[in-house]
Image 1 (cartoon, rainbow, N blue to C red):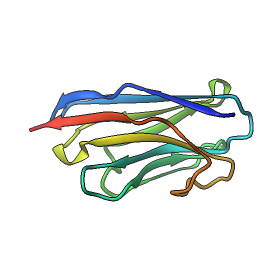
Image 2 (cartoon, one colour; image 1 turned 180 degrees about the vertical axis):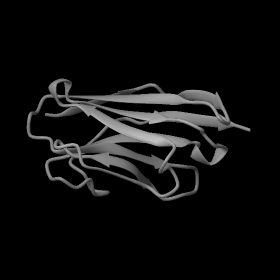
Image 3 (cartoon, rainbow, N blue to C red; image 1 turned 90 degrees about the vertical axis):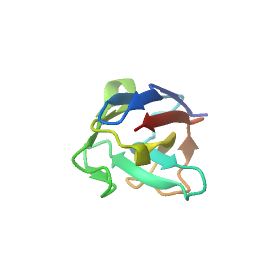
Image 4 (tube, rainbow, N blue to C red; image 1 turned 45 degrees about the vertical axis):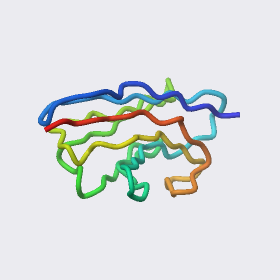
Length: 119
C-alpha cells in the first residue's frame, strides 16, 4: 500500500515563499506525482504535475511562480512556491498515479497540508 506523507505547509505573508515536500513509500510503480489544492468553497484543482521522466505542467495561475521537482531515488516530490498571493491559500494535497497523468481520481493521495498567505 502506497503512503504519501506531506510536509512544509504553513503561514506566510504575500510575496513570501514556501516549499512543500511529499514522500511516497510502499510502491515502485508510481509514474506521475504532483499537487492539487482546494480552497474553501472551490473545486479541487491541479497545481503542478511531474512524471518520472521529468515532464512537468502547471496551472496557469502558478506558472512562473511555482516549481515542481522530483527525486526519483527518494520517491519524493517538491513544490517550491515563490511570490505567494492570498489567492494561493488552500489545502494542498500530494497525489500520485501509476499513469503519466495525474487525474482528479489519482491512485494515491496525501492527507493535505494547509498553506495560508496573508496580505
